[in-house]
Image (cartoon, rainbow, N blue to C red; front, top):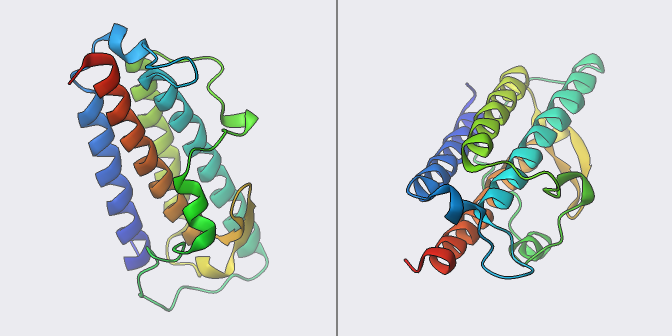
Length: 180
């Protein structure tokens, strides 16, 4: 795998492993419990994550596939892209957001179902990343609902940051519903 994608993949995998570790000791009841009227349960957060990731995978697959057909060049840089979203626009995403309708967890999966959905979504993302591997992804752009037009590396960096933000939310939710 190209060093840029390998770096992103490692970060995504570390974050996912932390999510799985955080929810592993939860009972089904605690995972389904909301810490407040307006707050999501762990099940809702995981369901949301299982909706976001395949959407990003599809965005990458479609955008890169189209760009290849238009003569996309191969990647020549190995510089890190992990900080490519740093700045004021990205800081907005650190604040609580209202999920867009298409990733709002209307049908909530149970903890085991959500973890299985996350495993499947990661496979679809890995497939999309494999198809994009070695291509100049900085030159392939698509609109993000909150960040504006960003490139495919930035879509992947966003995905990792999004999951890390929700990991912190999961940890707060677990503390609130279990007292630990």
